[in-house]
Amino acid sequence: MKLGNKISIVIVAIIAALGILTVLLISHVIGNALRESVQDKEISLAKVVAGNLANPALTGNYLTVQRDLEGLKDDRQLVYAFLILPDGSILHTFKGNISAELVGLNRLTPNQSYALKSFSSSDGKVEDVGVFLLEGLDSELHIGYKEDYIQTTLNHVFETIGILTLVGVILGSLAAGALGKYLSSPIEKLTTLTRKIAQGQLSHRVSITTKDEVGELSLSFNQMLTALEDSLTKIRVAEEEQRIKNRELSVLNGVAETVRLGQEINLMLYDALVQIIESLGLSGGWVYLRAHEKTGIKITSLGIAEPEIPCSQCEFCQCDLAKIKQGQCLSRNSLEKDGHTYQITGIPIYVSDRILGAIYLLSNQELMSTDLSTLQTIGGQLGTMIENVNLWRELKAREAKVSQLLEKVIAAQEEERKRIARELHDETSQSLAALAMRLKVSKGWIQKDARKAEALLEESKNEAVRIMRELHNIVFHLRPTLLDDLGLIPALKWLAESRDWKRPLEVEVQGNWSKEKIDPQVETTLYRIGQEAITNAAKYSQATYLFIEFKVAEDKALLKIQDNGKGFIWDEDLFESEQGKKPLGLIGMMERASLIGGRVQIYSDDQHGTTVEAIIPLKKEANCYGKN
Image (cartoon, rainbow, N blue to C red; front, side, top):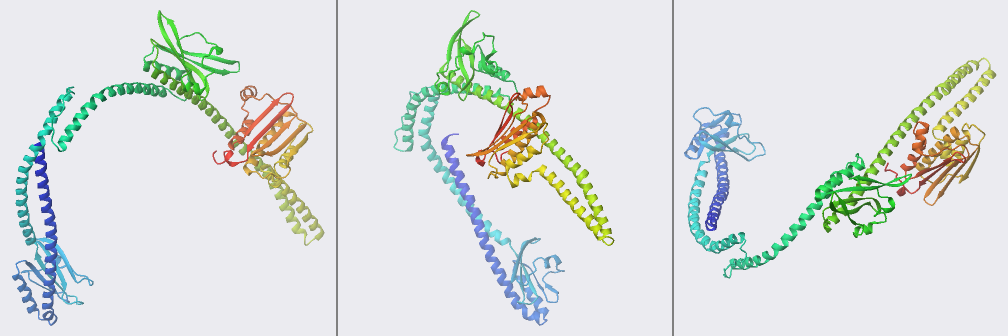
């Protein structure tokens, strides 16, 4: 469809829409005004009629009332009228009986002066107007009026406006046709030119020279054609750069998708290497990783079979992050294989400033600088992947240790509960039973022999003191009161001296005997670590000398427990293989310290005994309060 026709259609549609909108608005306004006017008139008429009927109705002259109601029917707009008298009887203008539903349709309430209610009937839509015969009198007058004449008036208005709207549409169509022809002519010229431009004919220009917006558009169009020729070259360059960028992102995404934390590192590296070779269209490649072991450093290969490279010849071992970012850590060599010369490009695999290995790629020609930049990024990506896998493994191992420690804690709690229950049952409960029996006997001797009763009561008192001492010992083993009353050193000293040692023991303590002003959580942690160390020494070391030291230095607390007994070679895996079980007690000490940001160090050998050092930070922002 041509633009001129579209303009004509739009203008005609606008005129028609405005006409319809005008009809609707006028109908709404006039309709509301007519209804309000008619309602006011009906209410006034009803009140006048009620005033005329009041006297004969109150004097009992119902014939006059009925005649006046019948006289209202001369008004052709009136449908009915009825009067509800105080005694409940009804006078009306209906030929037969009046409907009870009509009587109850619009009843007034005491606080109303009038009531209006519209409803549909066989005579059309009717509005019921109700007023009181007299104010304060329970008598109502209701008059029904037709509402059809309001709609008749509105229909005449609609017809008039519709005719005017039709005339406007006809005149607007004629004007729109002329306007569309005038406006579309230069646009048709622009359309013809754009078709030529679409065919690649950028040399054509628009020849419209009018001094209006269309002329300015033509001038701008010509300038656009000139700029378009210059932009095409830039677009081709940008498309090539975008293609390279997309290729780079595709390779990076492909490598990232190969990461699986539960997978072996070699298998993940193999998948990543295959992804790189396929994405960049290379001939092959391999990966070397530096593996740190007790025997030194070795290089492991992955990919096609290549000669082992000694660590001393590792090209990237001396690289750092700055050199890698500057592109200085790259190697280029050649390789003769199957009668063909390949270019070898080496890129370091790194994380932070550590070189983890290298990736070597075979290509038929030297790689572009963009591919080298991508491969450098991949080197960092692979390094991060390896680091994450190692951290994940460490996390799993740590979780296993924590799980074992938790099992031991639960078992220790259950054992402690059994011990307390046993002591309470075997000792305290029996002592209390004996005390009760002795008191009962003493009560019987009070009247017979006061001295005998007094002696029995003295024995009962001693028995009560002994029971209190037993309970005190039970509570002390749960948490020594010395720890709360005097501090860490006296509590540990008492603990060491109260243990059953296989040989006579000398205990030496050093530090501040008074209670240090440290966090209760830190103090309890240090006590439990010391308790475990002293218990282990008493069980296994056969020591004759125990040294306990506690001091606070700057922002940390140090607890040291050293014995001169028989030590052991401390290595968790070796300990498990020799003893047949996990060193959960030692692991528990370390876990307790780590939970509040501290650490435990263990030094032990067969000749010089064992030393346990616990270092705990005192500042809350330096430890892990609330995080574990």
